Length: 485
Image (cartoon, rainbow, N blue to C red; front, side):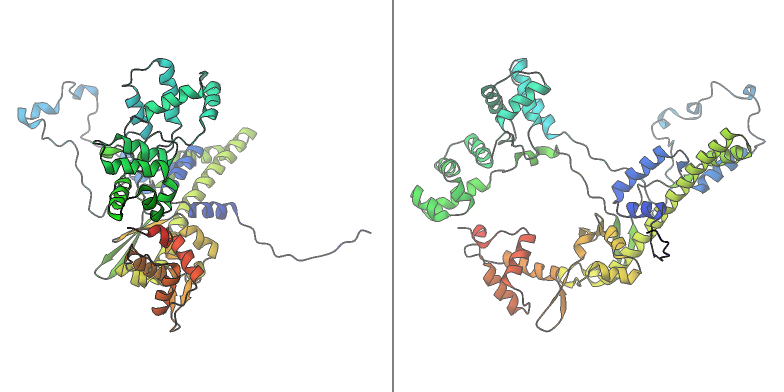
């Protein structure tokens, strides 16, 4: 049976402009620059520059000057500024003036240069006297090495891949021969299939072959599992050597490079720099916050498109209306995007300022023990924004201080109660835990149980499993793996 029912619903919908702002808010500085470039490519009504520049340039074009040349007859074709210079003034004459104030932002594009790891190996391959067939195989293998310099893939699967992609018929035996050629390259250890093979390649290259190196080769080749787990007693028993000799062997192995691909000599490897989104400076006890926007271009709405809209609006035919609608959409999109960029900057500064004031003692001193417990809700209530907005602000953003550059998300931590009832940050506990491990005796490292007792003595009542969780978050291995002879 059909019947009409009247109901009342409360719905909340985000407008396209709000969705656009939320997406822009979570972008870091570098990603924002790319997003602005994409928007400028898609929307021709969006231009680089500000409104003041456009007005001043148009005024300059409209101005008539009485002393300007009226015709080509008044101009000298053979005019040269060198006619008014001495012979020795050519190199010192300034053709450009740098009239910028110290406070003015310099807009530069950061970029990294350098020779890639694969390029360095290819250059060494070019020096080898091998035929074209084996050269292509070796070159393909170099392309399959990972960033650490290892060949992680199975040789059998590479045989099939090179046949399909390069139309080169080969065998596993030929691939292994080509791999041996690559393993002769620098840095030593490149082209290895696992850590054991990488260390063996480096040890066998060492000259002269001393007794310690021979023992190190034996340990890596035959007792790699015991060595990685630091079961030194088993190694001592099997090799029938004393502690002093084993110390020398371990020292020789630890000098080797487990990741040859990550250590290109003479600065040949390309490095990516972290670009901070915020900068906090301490000027005589006063914290100054600034937003990094020096590489983001100023934006304005195209004056040409605005004039086009006026012209098309006068036309009454169908084509004129369609053109007018198209231009209006582009102009509205440009204005919305500019507003969203400005609102993003305001929201970021407003939220970061609240975080800076909340952690004021830490940003003044740089001592992690001064960090207060802080969650997203604390900042959201302080600035009057939603928790999801604060989460987007903290996502993938970095802040630069006088004592380092840090991920903004790392300043958020849960609270922990001490015996005295004081609320402290979990980062403070991690800092104390890290200090205890750094000060421990490496011959008898502190176990998680002993670390629990030490922290309880300091007033932090924490369970052993929580200590283990914090230790893992700090990338600190268990006590057995921290042991040294």
